[in-house]
Image (tube, rainbow, N blue to C red):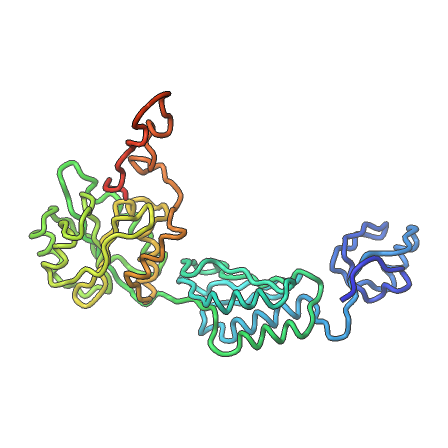
Length: 357
């Protein structure tokens, strides 16, 4: 592709690079120049125009973007994605329903190494999306790219899809809440229900029980057949053998992982009960704000396996936005405003085990 100023007598059929205002109207960038456009320009004293001229073997931007999108999503229904019509060299890939984005980072990174003018941007891996949410966007930066670049991208993407939406696989969940004197009680049930609804799950029951191993274990042992069990404790779970994990074991279940390197959300645990997943929610799940429980819940709801190693890997990028509902900030007020000569300003809040973690 050739780009730059061209005399008007050589510009017919070229692509206008920058918008031009004429007495007959405004020509927008990307306009294919016709003889009448050039006559209007000449009538206003213009002698040249900045434009792009395709070489043999070039693919114009919309066609290139559409081809790359088709290679990324050869089976829209099966991949749970919708391809938008190309416009100004861009095609968006939209979620066809709620779910979690699963992608192959290596392949998609290699795609972006083919040609700087051929780009793909995606949401992070395992990002939860609602119906219509944007999963990725293909953008051709220049007005055209060489055919060789487009065919190289198509060859790279041939075979197993590098991007798809995992749709919800579970359908029902129950929530068990434990109570302590002066505790939060069922505060937070609405936030939990909203999370499930966003993933297409129904909250079939909410039960409340005293915060003891025996009573919680008895409640958990009652198998109502739900696909998922959620536990929200009145007191923070601060050890793998605390009340809630022990109650899961007492009910015949197992704990696969306690704790996660995501804040807020540190005090989550994950296990199995009645052959189905159980999630011990951290106290921050009472708030609708994003926390580590969202990352686990969305994957589990969509039928994706979550291992202890997967959870360990969440630490990079796992420092989420501070939320005003946390009763203690990560940094104490004293640490934030050290007094002159203070010897132990670092003795800040030990907020690791507050109920909102």
